[in-house]
Image (tube, rainbow, N blue to C red; front, top):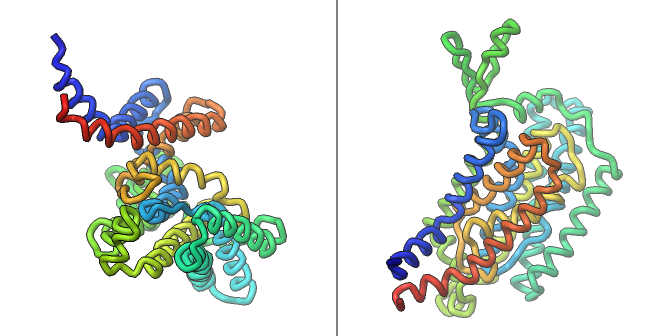
Length: 358
């Protein structure tokens, strides 16, 4: 005879951990039906493919926890990539060293990217414009300025040393012979190059450093507590002494910063700047946050959950490529996962609340 109460408890336990089960199942499936899917090289490919989504989704997590949404981040990636690339090209042409041109280009992109975030936050917090409208307006403005800056043409002829940074790895290991940190071993013969193992892409290291810092801020600081408080009940947060308006401006600036960082990562990976660079990743970023357990009504979510959600999308995309399945099927799969995640968010609280009633 089936113990209904016990079965329900097991079901709720599975429901709470469904993203971990889904990720493991996804990896197992593609490992069985694909070719060399579960390998060091492919795992690193998944992480690199997830870079833009990971960064956009991390910033979006802060906004969604407050009960808002930032639709501008897709074209903020393109805007930042163009600013970064144009600055590097101009400075190198003016006689600056490549290192200095790259450094100033990256800093310029990150700093200029804070301005749209401040405007978004000001409109939402001070002028009480709905976040959907405010950030959707900035979505178009960022794209327009990016196209003006690059004259509707991708930015090329960037410093040549940019490739070694964007395509480089933290470690290089030639079994039994060489173990290099940061720099690729030189003067290797063809057979040695075939056996050279590259470990942890630079872009992944940079991405997870920033994600780790802001995960700590959200989980362990007063700033994070205030973020959850605003999303849970904005009026109660104000009565508790939280400066909601200033806090919301900071939250939107964080989202804009991560979008700008994603633009910089795009330049490092593809050695170009393009106005529509991140437009296709906006939905993926929102989906990653929702898959990770955040509620679109606010007050709930974690950066760790968001990271899992982004990796699920990256693993799915890489798996489809591995199977030679057209990548437009990814949009169908991501849409289905989003609906499933929202349904869980809608119904799981009621199920968990009623757990003891049977």
